[in-house]
Structure formats: structure tokens, C-alpha cells
Image 1: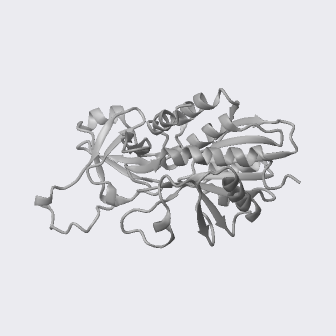
Image 2 (image 1 turned 90 degrees about the horizontal axis):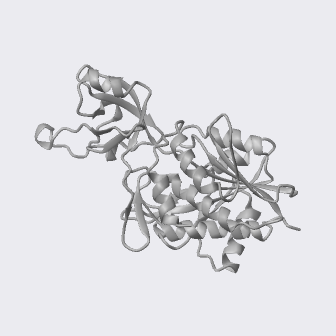
Image 3 (image 1 turned 90 degrees about the vertical axis):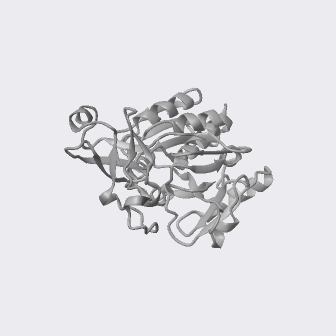
Length: 338
């Protein structure tokens, strides 16, 4: 599998939270050679592999959706008003190019510096954010409607070495890691259910309902977390791109699973980094762990710079090593194989 191409294909998809159909189709295409594919009413994608009659079921989760915007108004001059879908940072919006699900491009309106008060420290709030599609009101209303979604224009680029940059790498890189893991998993110990979940960026609906339905014995949630960049201090200043996935240790998670992932990484010589979080992880792992009567859960994160911006950056090697780590954990029988 060409992992970089898979990442680029996934990132080119629209798939704003709640409207994941385009990325659903792309992910299904990549997973179909390895597993039986199905869906549910909330838009989750499931792929089942491993031994279907195994005594243990492990759920692997990564979310399909991405942050974006919803159209709330179109004024008489044809300018489009938006509100956020997920965690939008107003600082990165000025002059950004946004696209609709149908591929129509617009630019976020921005006053030139000559017409402002000179205070460059203020980001324009979403309440005052409009998008210019270059069309009069009647024409734009034929192409777009209130309730349609927009997101950052797709622009995956290869940087130096194995680094890539694109919007939507949160969490399309997690999706790619599980697709790659499907290639590597070979087990009689588990029934493996890969769940590519919907609506993580908004309410976590996909993970909440999907985990309840699957009722797994164990789960591993894959997401992104923070890598070192200028001006970051504290524990994340030590997290480097290309140095391996981050194994989370949290009071929400099962410590035996985290310890086993660490042991597997050492045994298989897979580079890894630690992410200690005293409370909730901020991932679907929080929802899965308390689903139904409880699920033993671990979280593995891919280091990322510039989260929730149009230029997120990751290392492709970290995606590969995330897949290798998860597959090795499953192939050896996991943390509870006695």
C-alpha cells in the first residue's frame, strides 16, 4: 500500500462533521480488500477482520470527520455567513480559501491593512466572518444553501523528507494508520472491528453509539496530538515528528493495555513516545471507555504540528509505526492473553 497516496486521497475529501459521505467512500475503497465493510445510521464505517468466532473483540477507532463551517445566511450582496463546525481557530481564517462539498471555492473576507485601525493582534471573530464566492446573491443562492458545509481548501503537499502538510490530517492520518494496520493484522486471538467514526469534532456521536453497538472487550482509539514547534513549552516540547506514535497514559485508560503497547514497541523495536494525561484524553477513547458496561481502552496518537489549521504537518513514518504497533499488539494476543 502506498501510504502517502492514501493520506493524500483521504485529505482531499470534504467530510465535515456530520457530512462524511465523501471520505466514507474513499476509506471504504482502501479497506475493502482486507475486510467486510458495513455502516450504521450515524455514518460510521465498520470493517471486520481477524477471527470472527474469537472469544475477544477489539475495537480500533479513528474518526472520519474534519472541522469546517456551516452556512447560516447569504446576504443581498451575495456574501455568505458561516458558523463553526468543530474547533475552528479564528486566527487562521483571514483570506483562507474555503470550498463547498460540491467544489465551489470562496475566500474569507478580510479588510486590507490600509482600512483597519492598525491593531494586528485582533482576530476577526466568527460572528463577523463572511465568505466571498465572487457571485451576486441570486447566482450564489442557486449553488449554495443555508445549512451547506464548507471547509479549508484541500492542498496536500510533500515537505522535505517524509513530512507532509494538509488540512484534515486530523484525523485522516489516524484513518490511514488503521487501513495500513488491516494489511498487517494476522490473528486468531481477536475479532477485530475497525470503526471509522463520524462526528468526533462536534459531539462524539459516532464513537458513543458505535462502541455501544460493538460492545468490545478492548479498544484502541487513534487520533493526533501535539508535536513540538516554536513557543511550545512543557511536556509537548519533547514530542518530535518522526520519533514514533505517542502512547497515552491516563486515569481514563486501561493501564495494562498502555503498558503492553510499550512492551510491544520495545520488543518490536518500534519507536514510541509517551503522553501522560492526568484526566480525560480529549479523544474518542473517553467515550469508548465508558460505553455500555465499560471497555478496556488505550489511546495511540500521531504527533502533529499546527492542529486545526489549513497546514497541519505530520511524519508519514509515524503513521506507519502507529499501524505496526497496533498490529503487533493484536497479533501477539494483546494484554490479556493468559
